[in-house]
Image (cartoon, rainbow, N blue to C red):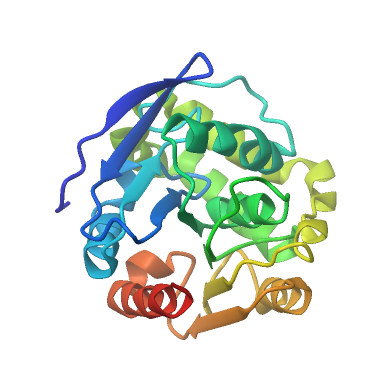
Length: 262
């Protein structure tokens, strides 16, 4: 791992939240808020946020949601609307705590869905733009299949050991909270498409064409529903982690998008 990755702890609404700040080289630029995937945390972004902030002049805020990384644990089972709750309750508290009003959301997987929910919730302050990597706006069969495979890797292979390096005592909570929610039969009805039409901020979606958690149907649904400008980048030979698997391409495309939207 390279880049500055030391984290701090903030007390937000009585809970310890692990976070990392990156200073802006251009204070007029928006702060990039990095929202991690269902098994992610602040540290798992590695130095991608640092590189992107350096390219764009933006400040950055990376944080671990409750139950992840060095943040406080959370109760299990997670509610099936945990992404909606993160977007409409916790994320506004995070923004208020750090007094951030000029920002762009950069989300991956669950974090991408949280970004879209926030942007479509008429929250104030509104994001300048949304960058959604491997987003999902409803539950597909391929999503459930991929999550079942992850469960086997956790229970029978080395996924748990790999996650423990980043989540420590939160490892079981991080995995079960995400995995059990998605495998709950009721989660088949999970759908956030109603949040898309109110989105007026520019949206940039990045999707790997070999993603084993979602298809282009997700991207088509977002493109057809959002009210603001829409841009997409479809990456051949890329799975569920575009920012990691195609780092240079993704970093450059995001920098261009941010330059265009201001």
